[in-house]
Image (cartoon, rainbow, N blue to C red; front, side, top):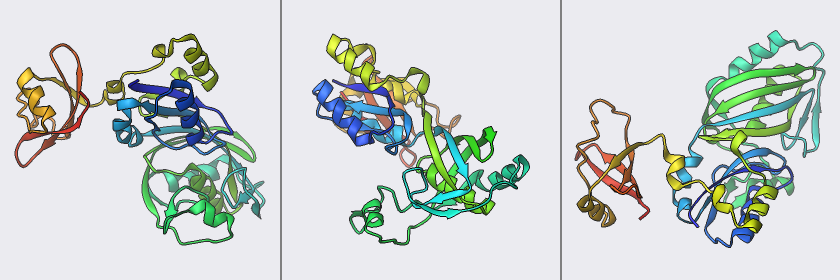
Length: 297
């Protein structure tokens, strides 16, 4: 069973819990997700099955879009509604102009410190386990990019933001840092991922609908082909000799891909003349040839 499911993750489920349930429903042992969502978060969770697990990294690297509901005036130790209150402030003097001014600090490329309550590891231990034990450790800041940060609703002290961001962005940290910038504290009240790369919430299916599809034997109606998630990469058709070389791990010369006109191209999808998706090739500038990156034949 090879393909990708666009799952609408419900609140109260961990991403790994969703994976476990899909394994039970489908009987497929090789299952992985692209982009962890916190247990209380909802929305798009691409799930790869079978050979599709080999392209998870390209889905994880994709830009994500969220709707984040943030409450001003209270900060928690987890930066979200599940935590204990550690700060209270008065947000009554904050208007939309002051909000926009504060949000400007978080647009573009920014430095962000991951929360203690996260799955990142310190000396082999997940940070959230250390946090639960009352241990706080220094976390290395990371560079992330906020492509879009727009106020979609403002009902004081609740603000709703549409956020389009790069891989590795912690929306909880953004909510907390916004509260600190405003001087009143804030926490993430609700989070919904509406898009992950090309996967949109409008086409996502619920776990209950997936269960029904498995029971009725029509899971194929929801299973997207592996190359669906790789449509941003250029496609090339190679002949039988090139396919054989690709399978053997040998480099290829692709005259049909003009690197001079598109220097940003580094990966391309390879297909056989009969339409079979063969895998991904990576361009090697030094040799001007293409190295097999993922062979899925």
